[in-house]
Image 1 (tube, one colour):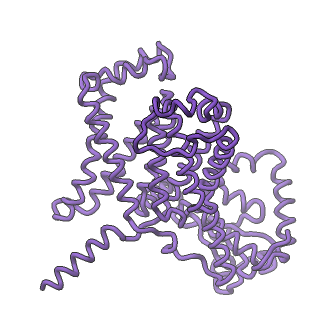
Image 2 (image 1 turned 30 degrees about the vertical axis):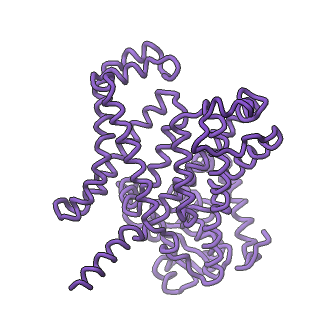
Image 3 (image 1 turned 60 degrees about the vertical axis):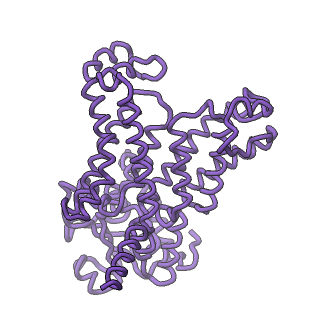
Length: 445
């Protein structure tokens, strides 16, 4: 009995820390960290010498009198102007590589160290978003976030298709759950501490805080008249924010109640999604109505890291609501190296799981999806069908795919401009005619 209890306890402990979850959420958070960090620091280009060097507003000899001396780290201390500029360019490059997912672990390490260095040197320029940005970078650095949503991983999948003919299994794009828990606990601390701070003042309790904020000349994007029109909503919005922040603590309490079988197992996910939706509403409104730096965008990036496979599946159901249940079938040439690699790229873009792929070189599959289409016609150009027996071919087929794949939605208006059908058909025809030059090993197009 003791051995059984001990084994059960160890299994529960192992499951609590190392249960595998999708790394896609952390991949999205890494992209958000890289993009927001890059844009924020790139906008500092004209002020690098002013804020981050010894010839600017903070000479090296004054550091001890202006900034804290404990728990502080910066490579900029004592660095010359040329070195600071070199580190600045390296920071931008590392953030860009982090967002793309190239040399991810190294680029993350460099970006985190340099971001701390620049922030710790010029503390007077910081806001809450910068603090959260550094924290996200540190959590990402501890996690295996490179397993999903990276250029490197996409290339690895293509190489696996080249070598084995099969795509990378989903398990290779998973990570242990502990970085997710670390992020969750940090967000709970952030919101609960914020709510406690708000309750200690009077403006949030009497409902005037939002009205005061939207009238603030330094932060509000609204005109005085528009702020006056919205002032009546201040008590309602204020208490909505307070309640939302306080409820985050229940993300710690609900799992215990679920373990005790007092609440159903789905409660935690439903509560988390409700809080994330409320948070998006709050921070989206702050971003639109106020100029408070990067805090709202950084919080939204952190939210992405709190999404796991079941959350993405719930989002797909929302986006796919009203669409046909049958997937869009893409017939491809399983003997063509370019075609097989293209399938991997399309799968990576198929966030809504709307596509199904059929190798027309398999006679049984060809008879199932295209019994009345000749092998020669299928070999000539891509065939895409949303309704059995009705195909969009070549460039028209590619246009159908852009409507189904979120990363390609930006191309939809462009591909329907006057004359694009002629240009697109010519480009597609050139690639289709020359694809035999692409093998599994290389492509000379």
